[in-house]
Length: 237
Image (cartoon, rainbow, N blue to C red; front, side, top):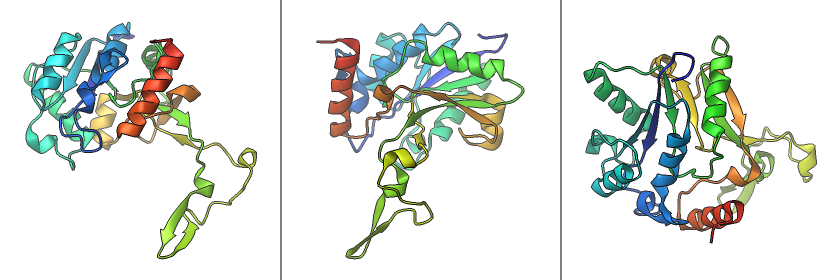
């Protein structure tokens, strides 16, 4: 709890990954991938409950073994390729509504973004509470190094600008920085999330990540890169 406001940390971890099958329980530097997000949530001074939303029994067992609660299973219709994270969040809130329990703030942690600093979550929660009247969400952002102004698309046999309206520059220093919402944390007021149905509400601020945190795991190549970065940053064997 922070400033009298209750906080739920939710980690969505479905079993049916196509890009890297079994990625949520794949061992990363000595721990299953999902366990890194659980550990980050458990370190928070403010999070009241750490829950993993999954349809997979193996993921559930691993999550519980590492200290998270898995009080329900996500139904198949909310765990397919077309299911949204918001639908999983609504399902979790429906479960707690049945227990007559409510939360004021949601901390969504994507297991595919395990490169968190120990204080990222608490700094973001403090930022939101400090600016409670001004903002409804805090999103983690990392600067991208493949700038949108030089991105390309394929037009038949020709190459074309991906965003023709952006002024292209061959010098990175001449372009305004661009940022991507890496899944280190999405922290949103629950009424706003349910009302606007987005993790990017109108009144949204940001928490800037360090360069090494700007990775997400979608396939094996990403996994290998994150493993190497984690070993380097944390001096792991």
